[in-house]
Image (cartoon, rainbow, N blue to C red):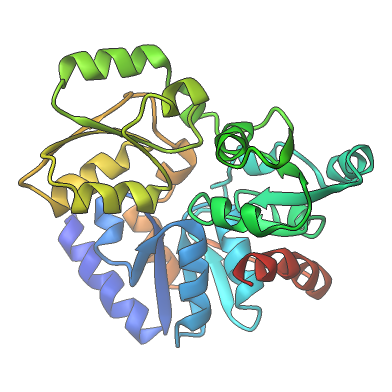
Length: 303
């Protein structure tokens, strides 16, 4: 039986031998993080893919992340670590449904959370991440915003940008939406000295009680830079583990044990090994037309 260390050593050898850059989303497990070239949120990883010198990109995450990497690196081979790793939120709206919504709100700028398919991005004006959304939406000249698909993140934005009118669909992350105000009460009672850090994909009743609400990267940076010694983490529970490894002098607790993305967990260390060995994963293929149209919304965020 091979050990974790043995498989990791083989991955490190093979990725150099086969010219593969491994990108791992923050929600991947610790053993995968340890062999990755870059770790971060979905858009940060896509930018790293474009900058990386390697000709092959392995995205350890979910499908929309691999699609975004392909859009920003059309000349590179992009592999999704597990073919079944999707994102329920990204699939809550189709391009044809969005086209109908645009007819209902003709004065609105269409803002897509990056957790959307490449097909949806072709119908949008601006693509945003949880980290960039506030600044990006403030700069949009239109006074009306059709924000898709996450109504929780959208509502969080609307409260901070009252001068704009927002329209939403009833979409969102089914994992973060499971976290309840009761979970907050229980966690605060159990850990009264801990600060509560949550992702804005959570319900507004949860984010309103947080000491900090922001992107996964923002949560990590807040915990790293805070003088506090205890934190309750309101996002995928993998972040609790990663923070424990990085900061053993501090204590981290999950806000809710149910906050686990099953799609992120599909990718295993052996899947990564098979991908760098050329026998696993799925190559992402997008048409030139889709990549060109989808990139416009991404470039709009960057500008």
